[in-house]
Amino acid sequence: MTLIEKDIIKTVRKIELKTRSYSEGFIQGFYRSKFKGSGIEFSDYRKYSFGDDIRNIDWNVTARMNKPYVREFVEERDMTVYILLDVSGSFDFGSKKNIKREIAAEISATLAFAAVHNNDRVGLILFSDKVEHIIPPKRGRKNVLHMIKDILSFNSVNKTTDMSSALKYINNITKRKSIIFVISDFMNLPQNLDKYLKIVSRKHDLISIRVMDEREIDIPDVGMIYLEDMETGEQVLVDTSNPEFYEDYHRLVELDLEYIRKKIILSGSDYIGIQNGSEWFKSLSGFFKSRIPKNIRNVC
Image (cartoon, rainbow, N blue to C red; front, side):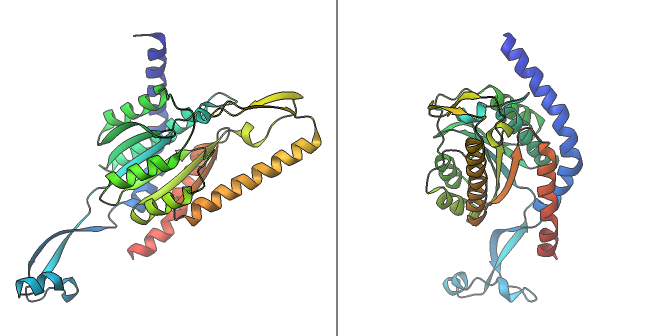
């Protein structure tokens, strides 16, 4: 085993210890409140019996059989959770201890362990400008550890992003309603991204998680530096001590953050914004907590 492989395994174990405590606490409770036991699915047809709810009569089948038939339903006992994770070049950026991909691995592990605790299946799709790597949905701790390892170790040949490819793929392979988390920095997006978000959100419970590094939001005064686009390789020389540059940069960043947030929400997806340097768990647990009242109203 190489030193790099040993480091990855060590990181996987560290992430497991950290995130299992999260998923067994706040996140697990919020997860269950939002996603468990709230749906039914079609099972079969049978002949109408006295006392059956007439609203369940299927009139097409009744007409064909010349006898009344009702639809039978069963409660959904589990769900399938998919995590779609960005592995493009920009997700390997980080100004402090952790790069964005490592933060994404912790978030993914927390969500995956919460699902596993509820006996749900979890799958992983890594994407850049195409679908790069797939772990089919399974139950159990071993599958989650496999996911964390692949998130940390996968090397994408393609550095650019086209999230629409992953959204089209997940929409084609999933027949039942699923919970889908998209984790990305949402940079260099296609113009028609909202089209694909809308398509997926109509069928599934879609949650978009934007992970940003704090230095992408706030550049310190360090004089003349080169800024590089990690997806295209394009570089530009800027003077960070120039007040005009500082003001223009912050204005553009704020406009971008608000534009992406609105674009995602208007598509029907929920939105969670996370900064790499902040405590991401607070943002995640705050999101789950905010959804509980709506869920209670729906159930009641």
